Amino acid sequence: MGSKKNVKQAAQDASDAAVNSETVAFVKRVIEDEQLRAQVGRAIESSQRAYERVAKARKPSKLLEDTQLHSEAAEALAAIRDVGLSLAEKGRARARKRRRTGRKLVILALGASLALVGSESLRSKVLDTLFGKEEEFEYTPPAPPPTAAPPANAA
Image (tube, rainbow, N blue to C red; front, side, top):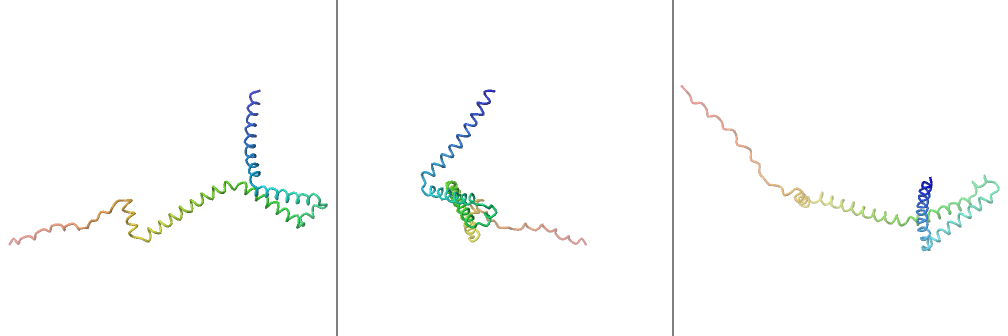
């Protein structure tokens, strides 16, 4: 029984270490990136203002009509979204690079196909390269079968 607890504890420790390494990476980015730090501060401040407004409300039904609360909540959500996008920006840059490469390949293929459609000489060069040169030949119909000689008059 003691070994099962050790295995479970080791698995939990590994899980905690993985979560901690991700958290450390995010915290490190927040510390190093001044713009990201400002976005996090804005998100925290706007969220606090919205929370204080909700906490001070005497009638919760009035919160639905409170336009200032709506604007503060929208600002908080926008700030949180900006923080999330900034943290995910590294992955987006890679995806953007892959999309650019894909676009270039599509444009290249489209240009090549249009060139092949428009130029007969280019088309024949490509076909000759792919399938070998065409053999030129002339068709001559077969000779007609010999006709039988007319029978001689046996009179």
